[in-house]
Image 1: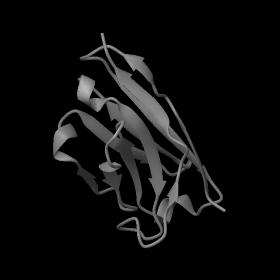
Image 2: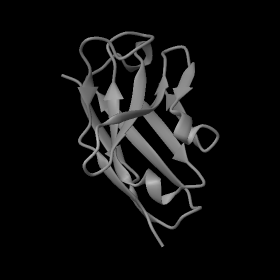
Image 3: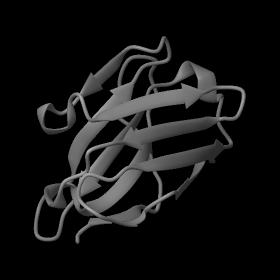
Length: 120
């Protein structure tokens, strides 16, 4: 059973930075794609960033140049570095563990989410 635990969310002022972490257990972590998604109140859950087992990345247009996804296979952890945060980045951020090397696959696993609030 794959278990994901996110951390690092919180309240930050516009223009600030946060780093989210997602620690996985119960997984052969290094061979699967991983991702970060977010859901704002009243909106659908959207992809923020994805990283393949080989380290290729893909970002939503709204976060390109500001957010960076990375992975540390030795620690079974995926990160999301968020810089130049905007109020519209406010959402619950979820970690997602795929079941193929290049994509999430038909079956995937979700963390419980961590709240990010960008406000002055």
